[in-house]
Length: 388
Image 1 (tube, helix red, strand yellow):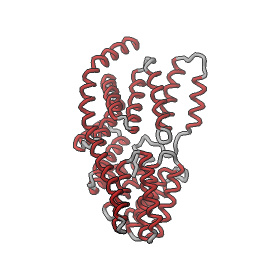
Image 2 (spheres, one colour):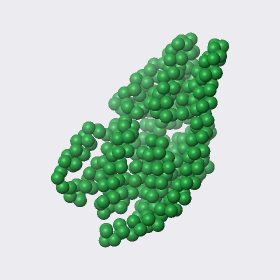
Image 3 (cartoon, one colour):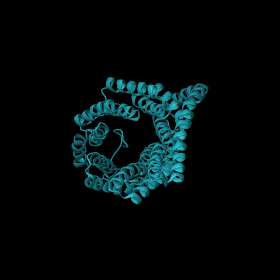
Image 4 (spheres, one colour):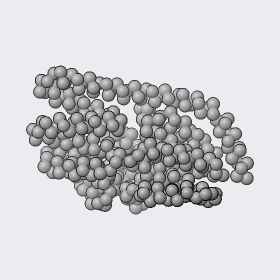
């Protein structure tokens, strides 16, 4: 299941309104310092709104915001833009670029002694450790962020980092610890009235399905869906996927199919949600197999491979190829089975290779950050002179 921290707004932000606001600001012959600051703020918000629908445009907008912010006497804003840019680069696969930007943002956050900036930059770096398969370092990072959030009595971020720990253990198939952390995150979100209590209910339900507690999972997911507004398509698609999975595990195949089909239709409405669509299609293929609809199952698995390739989601691509391999092997179509097995192995090898490359990237970026730190110190000194 795709999950978000408390900074995500399920209702979305109108990119059309932001684009109009941006065009109006850019059309002015001369920008006052206040106008320039407003322009940077608009660019940052627009970049965030574009993240799931148009990543290249989101990165371009964030780069423009950072470039403009560096000309303003607002080091905090420049560092904020840099953190945003580093997160986008991490999501788009520009791993080393993201690491170096996050390290620079962390440096300036520490100089400013700003808790929010330090936390945001560390969040990117810890996420990168998790992507590199450095799970012990990632766990230490999330725990350190959790401790800082508690020290600052920041309940929303405390819940976020509990959720991050839950996702970390989910990746390692430790679903009991996953459930524990996700329950604790949910309880905080609910207590402080954070809208993410809805997604957190679904997170708990998903963990319960992994532990075979599907009746309980249905209860949690049903409550999540009841709290989710009709136009929040992304969240509703995820919740319906969880409901479909629980019904399928309980052999309630008709209800499972209804939930999964509705979830798939909603996920298709939102650009950039190929991840959710691919996950739902994987489970729909299982339902089709139970109903002895082999052609439909094969078609859905092929759709998963195509979606996963487009979105560069290697583990889902591997899962689909493995399912196709097993099906063709059961049908004694050995040439096709061998072909899909080779594709499965290719994906698994790519996953391992990417993790190793990312681990090496940390070593390179550590050396590069050490080389650049004197320049960052000089820039910081110049910035202080300009502000004063």
